[in-house]
Length: 144
Image 1 (cartoon, rainbow, N blue to C red):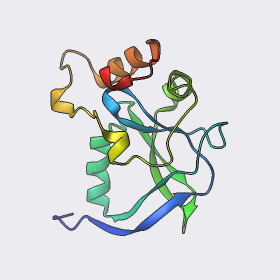
Image 2: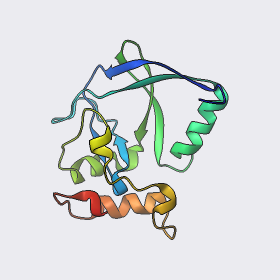
Image 3: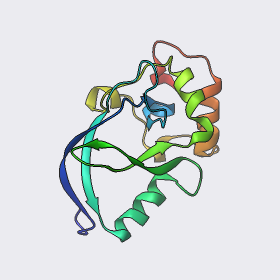
């Protein structure tokens, strides 16, 4: 935001329910499974982003590494793009999370989040995701 590449516009909410789950290290994943049973309409913030800022966000979100994919999404008040979990693991992530998600990723949901620099460095993020979806779920996923 300090560089002028990003400006907050408004709060918004998805038109259709989408699963929003926490994966390994309490990292949030919006799953491109619109209308999935048990999913809620997701609330979030809408930002205007410059081309340079969008390139930086794509790098951060790992779109070239198969972590997330940026796709259009219908929200109120208007349609925008969102970063969805890569489709190659979205269904397994939803099932691993017991087909239960959140309507917002806020302070409570982020409790236990592990910063990238504090995660194991000997595994790629995709390998961490693979371990997460192949592990059995527990009532407290903060341990992963």
